[in-house]
Image (cartoon, rainbow, N blue to C red; front, side, top):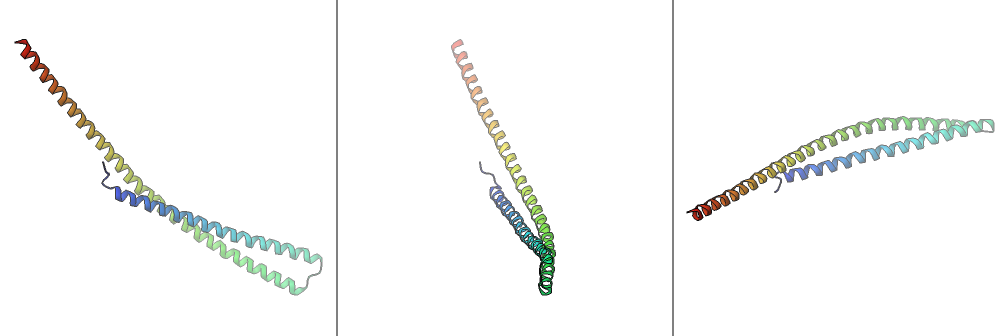
Length: 152
């Protein structure tokens, strides 16, 4: 027995797989952004520590200005990355909802397939029952005819 919507079910399964990959890609994108953010934070922390250590020693005003400006650049980069994270979180949510919808559509077709298979099994059982009833009826008639003929 072939499910009449098998091609559509197959398409829905493929769509679901694509949506899963898109969601995984969005999570990977976020992970890459978080790694980049952490590298900026680490660089800023290292630079702050370097400035702090240099204040006890000899640091030129020019070096202090350069380091302070670089910290400002890092702060800007960290803020920009925070915006990227917010955007990718929204993208992840959209992709998650799309995946949930694709899963629902596939599940509906899976349920229809199961219902059709169950209906097919019921019909097969009824056909088997009819065939059994016919065989039993035929044997009964044969037995009755045999008894009638021998009883005469």
